[in-house]
Length: 64
Length: 64
DNA sequence: TACAAATGTAAATAAAACTTTACATAATGA
DNA sequence: TCATTATGTAAAGTTTTATTTACATTTGTA
Image (cartoon, rainbow over all chains, first blue to last red; front, top):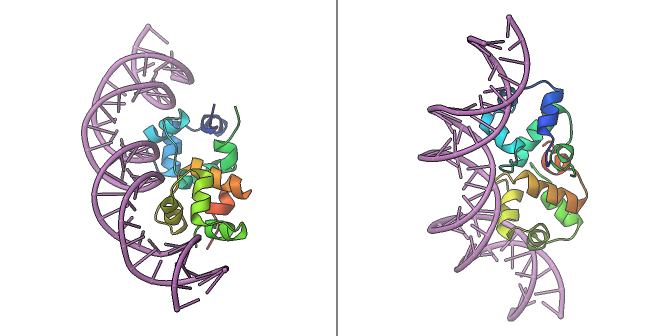
């Protein structure tokens, strides 16, 4: 696992669509990021981290 | 000013080319990011933050 | 079970990141 | 001053991110 978006999303009881709306992207973008289809921009990463009140490093740089 | 790459680069006495090499991109990419021509990927942002031993938020999310 | 909501997935397209090349200007040092 | 190094900038092209649409499958719940 490379990022913890799914985990934080579960913790906050948000659907992919909910999170997408909160950070201003499409649901498929959330899906793709969660499933490591691609690397988001740092701006989007910061928006997500902010929303979940965690650091970018925690959300995207977690080992294992 | 939106990001502190130029500042950290000065602190570490690195040229754009040096930093580019360290994080594996072209010098023009560093130039473009420093000058807010575009938003790097979170992976590149993390590489830079790591190199400078600062957080992504500090490097890219500093106010003013 | 049956329906609704959420997720997985794909394909076409648009937009943006990033590379490469190239050159002009500014800064630094011998 | 002269030469070297660093920076600013641009344009063309490649790669990747992100959108939109669409549909199948899974999961939750009445």
